[in-house]
Image 1 (tube, helix red, strand yellow):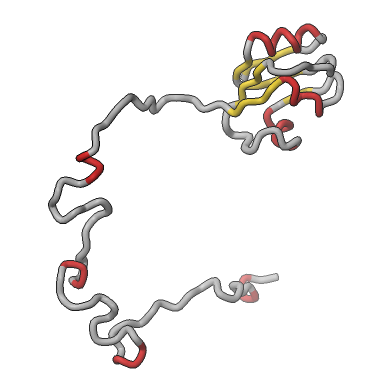
Image 2: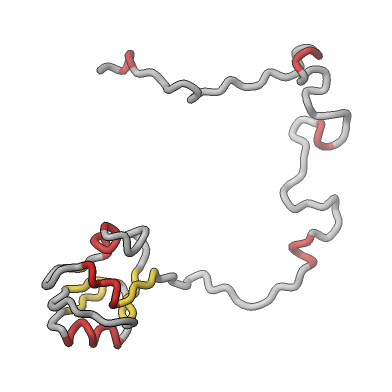
Length: 147
């Protein structure tokens, strides 16, 4: 395999539409821009949300509440969902992802105490855990490690 023999798959490169090359192709004369006006000029057009100088909608509407930009969104797992693991197994976020309990391993996980746990000796490593979940795991001889 060499660089010379590499080919792009069919449809990977699309040719640019040539405008202003005769009236027969449907993009001649005005090149699909209509006649005159701001949107027909080169570099013309307005930004998203611009309403011709009228006070735009996003400024007319009242703003309410507070949005905390530092809020951490946890993915929630319940103790009952840990039944898929075997006794004395190590439970990490990567293993939770492998079992299909969480979708992405790069966001924080919180373990809650809903349901019953029968698996003994689990070694759980998560970002956050509730007191009831920690109690249920430790009662069965397991341990909890916060990342």
